[in-house]
Amino acid sequence: MAKSNKPIVWSLFAGGGMIAAFVLPAMIFITGLAVPMGLLLENALAYDRMLALVGNPIGKLVLFGVIFLSLWHAAHRLRMTLHDLGIRSGRVAMLACYGVAGLASIAAAVVLLSI
Amino acid sequence: MGEVMDRRPYVREMPKSWWLGQRRYTFYMVRELTCLFIGAYALVILVGLFRLSQGPVAYGAFVDALQGPFAIAFHLLALVFALFHTVTWFGLTPKAMPLRLGEKTVPGTAIIVAHYAVWFVVSATLLLVARA
Image (cartoon, rainbow over all chains, first blue to last red):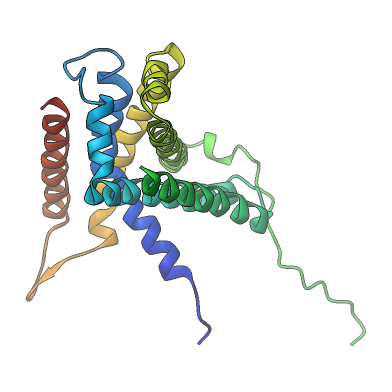
């Protein structure tokens, strides 16, 4: 039987979809709405707190997991959707989607390890 | 063989707007396009972490930029799409991972309800930690 990378791609898609479903609504609310609009959580994104969070190895790992899996989920779904929308050049779509997700994931790892 | 055979697979023409005609197709497309907001938000966090690595001044500028009207509008929209993703994702869980306990198949609603329960706990924990 020919080897296929589909299970890996699909697991990352599914894992990312699950993580995104569980944590992103609350995270978007906190970082994008509550803090900027001054609703209850003024201190949530304070520099020292974020530095402490990212300084912690578990914090780094969790943040990397959320970013990496969300990006792969988005990349895979977007690739499939582009096909559904009639963009037939599969290879270009594949390179663009996974390429951006891959580069951004590497950037996330580098940035997290630098803090 | 006398005939020239065309070996390209037949691709039926579809109008690019096929998903606008029927509600369920539109619903499907909106569900798929939630991924744009999920990916974009992941990039926003990445930028925030990059600015954090540059020190307090750069990070302060990033946090200030989150208050701009464009940023607020983006996050409002992203929240709506993220919630839509959560609801549709949980709705698919019984099909994606049917569960059997011994002889019995766990009913789909139980699987969905369990996901909502975990979601509630995770979200409440994140909000409490952010508030502390």
